[in-house]
Image (tube, rainbow, N blue to C red; front, side, top):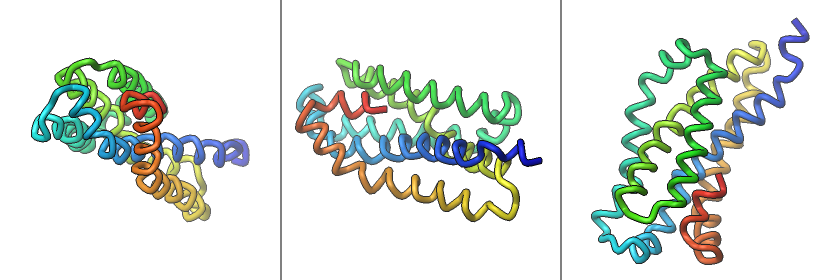
Length: 170
């Protein structure tokens, strides 16, 4: 039984970091919207789809995350979601049109939407019952860091390097 829980804190930090990336990406983009508008020649109504597409994709994938993680296996599904999230982040940064950016943000939202709930399920499986509080505290710190740092980090990165770099940090 001790071997089963040997690496639980490494797992907790890992899944928390993945959740931080997803939450950071949700809030970091909002600061770069004016720069994207200028660079892509989009109106406010058009550029809003960058955030809207991501959020809608999150909402679409969330209800079926439990089934998908049971079908593919929780760890495989989690790793696949991270891969989709990171690859689509790269393509978001390389997008040279609004349509391409919105498309890749939707794909990114599909990958990112699974990270929070799957992270919690993994922690639930990896920690013994008496340590759930500790596991959720580690996870909770990560969940609070992303949205807190997102706007500040997004503003700095956008001003210093340009808006595509907010996607490359993933």
